[in-house]
Image (tube, rainbow, N blue to C red):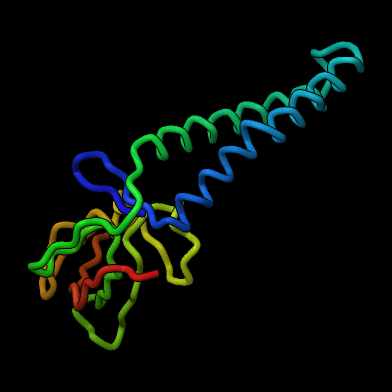
Amino acid sequence: MTQTSENVTWLTQEAYNKLKNELEHLTGPARTEIAGKIAAAREEGDLRENGGYHAAKEEQGKQELRIRQLTQLLDNAKVGAAPVSSDGTVAPGMVVTIAFDGDEDDTLDFLLASREYASSDIETYSPQSPLGSAVVDHKVGQDVQYELPNGKTASVRILKAEPYNG
């Protein structure tokens, strides 16, 4: 999956089908199942002290959130290959090879995409992650810096950026 500046999400047919099936399950059988759990827990009596009821309601809230996320994602999805930069600029949907601190013996290959693309065997970084946002829109050969979770700064050199053909 890749996102472009027009807020379009590009999905492979496989990823689209997987997400569509998940949405159909969540809005059908899974909704019925959680409603049954809530009804059964409600029959147990006092709702203030009913752990099963509260757990089922929490599960329902998470499920409804995922339904909203999937609906929005699929509404903005286009199936096919995302447009690829011809000038070596890193963009979502690409496999990127970086070298830490410019050391070409210390490299990492990763797919720059969102987690819904996780059917791949390659490590995936979101374009919104610190590393992902640092490399996006930069070209092969450039050095970029990003902030680590501990507040320190790391430097990487972009060695390669190729379209993902998963």
